[in-house]
Length: 195
Image 1 (cartoon, rainbow, N blue to C red):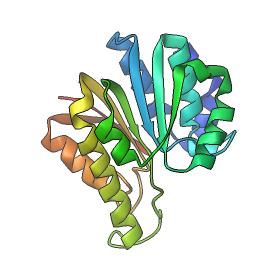
Image 2: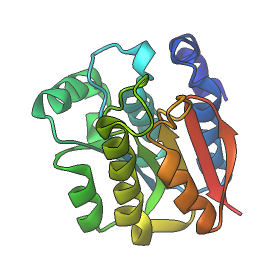
Image 3: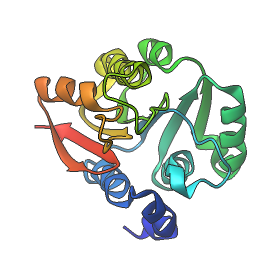
Image 4: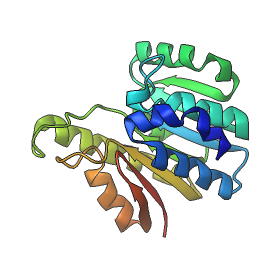
């Protein structure tokens, strides 16, 4: 995918190249244009290769391929930074300040790609620590809130997956399996499509 060449070096630093690229390729293969990308947990630095630069990449993709990005964060400073980082793509981006679960509950459009990356998780804490459990429950609540807004054949990408404590994705992965989805790639992110 030629689009990805400009971000490959940055994504390689965060070990998200394969999953991020495949998620966007799947959208194009499904020919869902125009379409909707929803991201929870926006980009927090102007240039953030270690964090994946998701808002910038999604915004550029949306402008290039006729999609619209909704990026949601409960931190107004993070949204301000994300808006500055993506200002060249602003016509195809909606910056939403809200709790991600509340935002997804009331979202009134069909989601083609859902990217869940809100609420930081302490990477090296015990699987039973409060911070880890709260992050996992939050992501599960996000997928439940978004469930009836997903398209018939959505792409779901989960961040902070490959941690020894289960990462943010542990509970969400059980939920997706129980609801007929398959994990097709895994690393720092976990990529899911319908069986």
